[in-house]
Length: 117
Image (cartoon, helix red, strand yellow):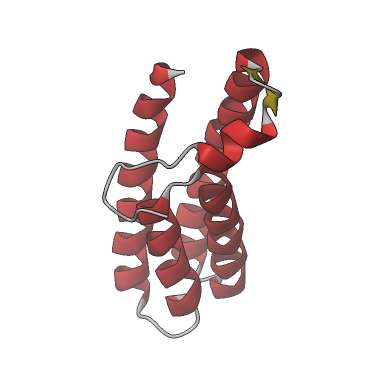
């Protein structure tokens, strides 16, 4: 999985939506929409977790975002959320807040890429 900022390797998600030589674009759009909706909700919850000092909630949210990034093939987002998940227990809250904001910015870029489908 390419971890360059903004890169998405869609082979996995396209394979899920493929039957023979045909890709179900409606299903692909639905899955991408779900990715966007869920991760928008998760990033808001992650910001709240940092404000509330709820490190376990932050770790769980980062883990969920990491899994969805892997399915989408968003390597850079996967790497950022993996780091956030690993750092949730021990990093200072201001550091975690900056990391959550960086994930938010990268997610915003991933949303913009949805238009290519």
